[in-house]
Length: 329
Length: 261
Image (tube, rainbow over the protein chains, first blue to last red):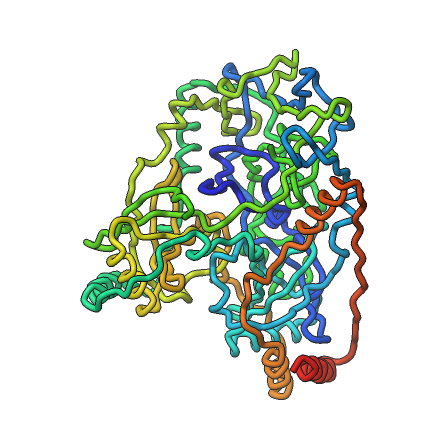
C-alpha cells in the first residue's frame, strides 16, 4: 500500500503497526492465495507466495522504565477510553462534518469473490514500467498437473510478453502483471494508473535538445561503469543489524535490559504463524511439485516476529484493515 | 509545478549532475476517521501503562528491541539517532547493468528526477542512458534512511526506482522451474497464437481501482441522502483437454477481435 512519500517501509525502525498488506504473511509456508489462472478457456491452478520474507527486528513500545505499553482509543471530547463497539468510521466531507460508513456498506462494495486470475491481455514485458510494480509474488502450480503452467511460461518467455490480469484477494481487487522468467511465473501487483505521477503531471521542464558532445561524455561515463551483474551487497541495508548489534551490546553491559512478555507473533494465514520457513527452499520444493503439504517444507528458523509489534496496536475489530479504505489518521 | 522532496547530486564516476527528486506515487486511498459513535467526536489513540491506564506521552515512549524471548533492551532517542546513516546529498551510481540483471521482486517505489541548475547535463545524461540500454544502480541516504535504487530513463526524463532490501525479498535466481514431459510442438504453436491474439499495448492509465471508486460513490450518495449499490454477473467456465481448449480459446479471441474491428 502506498506509504507517505519518502517513507521507506522500515518496520524495525518505526515499528508502525497494521500497515502491511495482507501479502506479507507469505513466509509462513502457506500460499497467501490459491485459485486459477485463466488463459482463454484454459485454467491453470496456482498458489501465490509473497516474494517478501518475514523478518525485521522484533520491537515493542515501552515506557522509559521498560513497562510494555498498550494502545488505547479515547474520545477526543470526553477523554474516556472507548470499547470497539463504540467506535464508528466516518469520512470527513467538510471540516467537522462526517458521513458515517459501516462495515456492511463497505462489504457490499467488495468485488465479487473470485478464484480466478484472468489473463486479459498480453503486452511487451519491457513496456511495464518498473514504477508500476508494488510488490511481487511467485505463482506455484497448485496441482500435480504442470503442463499448462509450463506451456504458458514457455510461451510468454519466447514472445517476451507479460500478461495483464486482475484478481481478488481478501475483498480487494488488484491489477497484476504476470511475468515468466526461467520457467517460473511471477506476479507483480501494479499500482493503479492515477497513483503514478509522470514528468508531465509533475510539470518537469520539457527536454532541451542535448548537444552531442555532452551526450558522448555521459555515454563514456556510463560505459566505464558497465557491469554484467548487480552486486547484491549494494542493495543491502544494514540498519536492522546495527540496531540489533547495539541492543546486544547494551545487554552485555546490563544497560536498559527489561523483561517483558514476548512481542506477540504476527497472526499468520491459516495457522499460528510461529514457524517461519526458508522461503527459497519452500518455493523450490513447491515448484518441483513435491507432495509435501504447505508448511512442512523448508528449513525452520526461529520465528522472527514482525517488528510491527501488532499485538500492541491491536485495533478495534470494526476498524477496516489496510487495503480497504482505511482509517489511519 | 510540483514541489521537490529533496535536492541531490547524481554522481557517476567524476561526473556530477545536480537533480531534484520528486515522489512518483500519489496517495489515493480514501481515509476514514474513527469516531466515537455517541458524540461523533474523533477518536484519539494513546499509549498507556496497562496497570493503571495512565497515559505515556509519545515523546516518552521508547522502543524496546527483543534480544531474547521476553528480554528487551530499551533504546534511548540519542542511541537511535546515532544509528542513522550520515546525511549526504549524493546519489552515487555504482554501476550500469542490462535491464535483465534486475529482478522484478526487488522493485519497491518510484521517484522522478528533474534538472536542478543545468538542464543541459540532465537531458544529456537521460539521452545517454537511453542510448546505452542500461540501467544504473544507485545508493543514497534520504531522511535518515539508506536507499538503493535503479536509475532509468523515462521518456526524455530520469526516474529513480527504490529497491527493497535484498535480504527482504526472494528473487527468481536459484529457484528451479517445475519439470515434466516435453511440451508438444502443436501445443506450443497454439499457445503462441493465443498469446498473440490477446496482444495489446500496455496502458497503465487504464488500471483503475474500482473498489475505491465505489467507496467514493457511496460516500457521495450518502452525503446527498441517497443510496448506492453495485451489481455483478458471474463468469463463464469451460473444461476439456489442453489442446482442444487452446483451439476454442483462440477461436473465441479471433471472433472477439473481428467483432471489435
